[in-house]
Image (tube, rainbow, N blue to C red; front, side, top):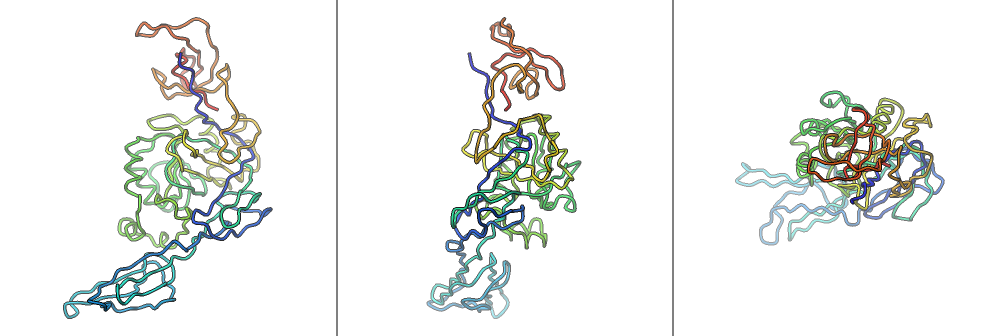
Length: 390
């Protein structure tokens, strides 16, 4: 008999957590052990040693034909002209612009290549708490107190912002820089609208795999110039890169339940709804396509002053770096979700484990469980069609 699946998805209310904020390229850590940090506090700067960008200009023989507007050592802004080239007696014109904020490192008159070194990238804390560990040039560990919500699917990197419960299509005035929450099914038009509106991140119950995969393909490697051509906004030009350059997706997406039209767990929905619009910050990490990966997609709510948001969903405890949380057992009182059959995707409480087997439509007799579904009342479900929620 297949045992009930222990999904590990849970919610720990007002727990102590520790998360490591890393400098993916190495660099300079700006905080020390004992430092109090807020989401906007800079942890450090990514090194610029490996972040070189090259502009190839026109050459003829061993001579550069482009007219230089900058010299080696000059600072440049993203989108600023560095050189230009005219041809056909002035009828043709080509301009070379810097793809990043940085410094002109070198200019080769032989190859026509202009090398630009990108400025070190600032890496913010994105979390509220205290620095408890520092690895010089590499990372800092932040310890804080908040509500930790495990998610089934994640896409993108990390982000932080105020929570906004979405009603209708996202508008730039309301969505810019926020974490949008959709308690139900995420559709492709809403996903695209949130990206255009410059949301910092998006949390939803479920979504089609094809929709999320298409979004990932459409945003992977998207440069500022390409984004500006599609959805121009001056705010994007001055946006601080919070990913440290490790991911191309600019708007992380987290699905709390998984792929498909799954309802959001009531305790998760209540916690997100209670935090929305308040002086609370949400940190989200989408660095996992599924919860079984080495990294776990999650949402952390901080700044709630221990008022009991989501209290009772999980006891007091510590959620360490990548910790899966306390063990769970398939016993009456456990929170479960139906994986298949008439109640597929619905969540409830395990009430009893009858000793007698139930007979399926196929004629097969299997062990069953009685589940009190949150929306539909008591239902008898084969045990193999249940997963336990932590």
